[in-house]
Image 1 (tube, rainbow, N blue to C red):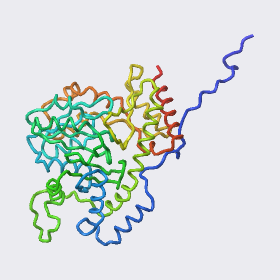
Image 2 (image 1 turned 60 degrees about the vertical axis):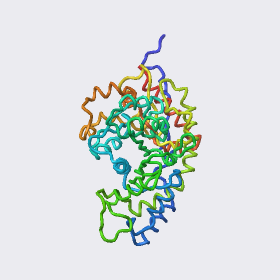
Image 3 (image 1 turned 180 degrees about the vertical axis):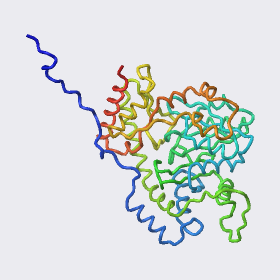
Length: 406
């Protein structure tokens, strides 16, 4: 006698691995430090930088944290980039080399000056602009090289500084992800170039919005100050605007909040470095999953996001998007990577090379791969305890296996 399918005992499906909804730390993080700072700014009675002290105090503290002699706080990372370009006189007719894999602000800031962004390919491992890719696209019109320290991993600044003088160009750092980063023991702000930072809501320290620049010399700081304050010197009372510019000033409330946020950066960076290394170790055995590599010269990576890329033929064209969806369902905060910057309509709204998407894609194969198969996890996963990080890795491994099945 046989047992029919209808009467056969059901086999329970394996339980789906998932985090609990409240297992990870929240973001942004704040406490009585921010509350006190906001009240301090409120009660001083001057809410803009010319009358208050919070923004200028933050600038001194932020410069010191990043190893720079000078810092200027502004209202966004995008404005910081544009100001840095304008300090160097970048404008119409100039070309600026940017990573093909980056947020659009990197290229948009170039276009806002009238210059042309020239996308170059990135390393498949650490996902930063490479010196070889820069040489491949540099021309007589190149006036700046604008590397992005992707997810906190610093680009190869020493090599880029060797290339720049060959084209009478400068290096400007997009350090939106890299507060407190260091390479070969040199902090991001101690490099002999202007660095630009972001304090948008998701960044490693935040006031909701905001940005900053650090400078290697007083001359560039003074020039940027004038440009960010509609051309008005800091002590002027007679409305003597000595040059053109923009209003990119940070308000006192943002400066106060960022002073409190900065007090956590060193400890948060230490924890993220430890948890990031643990995740690297736990995910190394997962077939078809590549984590962001780390150059031997990297001293400190503050880990803005944890980067992953699917590799191998077993993953179909929709696998990355499906993986992100599964991770979100299972309370792991995940998001698709940026597309290559030239695959956004906004890129083509400004000045560009005389080229096409197909031509740019052909010269940037790694950016194409990362854009199609890459994803990132919010940096708050690296502020969780080790036992939670182990569970995060288990959830990721199970989800990767699920999306890789035929």
